[in-house]
Every structure is written in structure tokens, then in C-alpha cells.
Image (cartoon, rainbow, N blue to C red; front, top):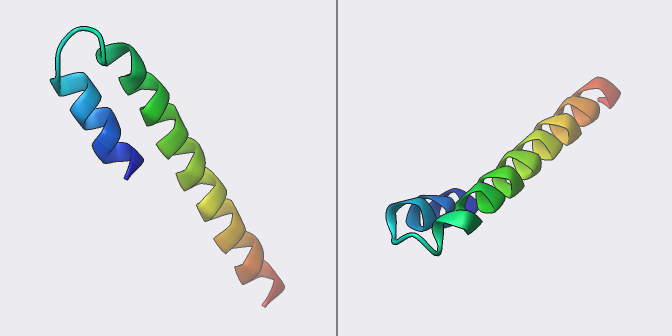
Length: 45
């Protein structure tokens, strides 16, 4: 969902583009946390 929000923000006019980077960073942070949790669970199993 955050990837879609960043795409919309970058594709639209000038004003929402400043939020596109923020949405992009949020989505990358969520993805890294998700991967770290999966790796941690795999190591414990």
C-alpha cells in the first residue's frame, strides 16, 4: 500500500511529490523489518 501511495505522490503534481519520498522510506522500512522478522523466526525454528 505504501508503494502505491509513493507512486501516486510522484506521478501527481508538484505539491504531493514531497510526500512521495516519505511513503517510499516507510515502505522500505516495513519491508526490511518484515524480512528481519522472517529470518529471526527461521533461525529459531
